[in-house]
Image (cartoon, rainbow, N blue to C red; front, side, top):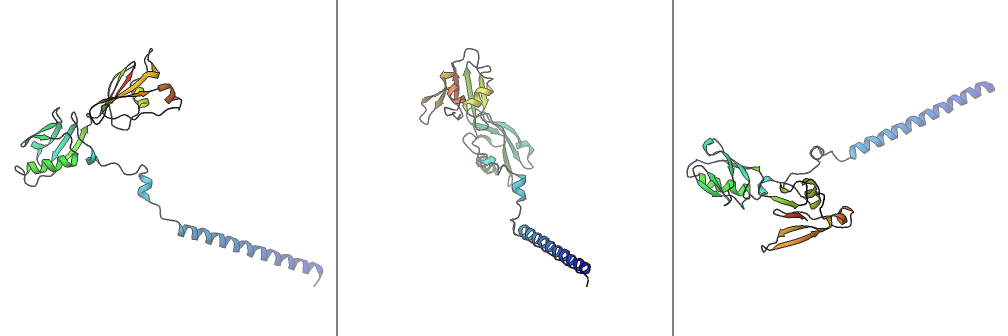
Length: 217
C-alpha cells in the first residue's frame, strides 16, 4: 500500500468514527428530551383557562335593604319576578305574602321560600339571584368634584373612592380628609386620612366598609 492509499484509508476511518459519535450524541440527546417529556407533570387545562381561580359563591352574599332580587319558581310564572327588598327588610311574594329577606343569604332565602310555597305548589324549585346590589354603599362628601353615594361591589379604599368622586375640588384640604364609620356598638368613629402621605407611599390606605362616609373638608 502506497502512502497515498494509506492516507485516504485513514481519512475515511476518521470521518466514519466522527459520524458515529455525532449520531450517538444526537440519539442520546433525543432520548433525554423524550424522557423529560414523559416525566413532566400533566398540564391542568382548567387552571390555564381559569387563571383567576374559583369565583365566590353567590349564595354567601348577605341580602340588605335596597337590593333587588330575581325570584324564579320553576313552572310557576305567577310567583316569578323581580322583588325589591323594602326598608323593613321584607319582600312581597305572590301567594305567600311578605317574607323576611334582609340579613339572609340567597341560599337561605331560597330554602325559606321553598318551604313557604309547599302549601301552594307541589315540590317547588326556587332560585334566588341578586339582580341589583344596592345595600352596600359608601359616601364621599365635601370638597370633591362629584359627591354622592357609590356601590360597594368590590374592595374599595379611600384613594379609589376619591377617584370615583372625580378628585378634589379647588379648595380641598387634602391633609384633613377623614372617614366616618359605625363600630359594632353603633358609635361613630373618625379615621383620619392624610392624602399627601398616602399618595407618596408614606401611609396606609383605608379599606372602606359598607356605610362608610369619606369627608373632604
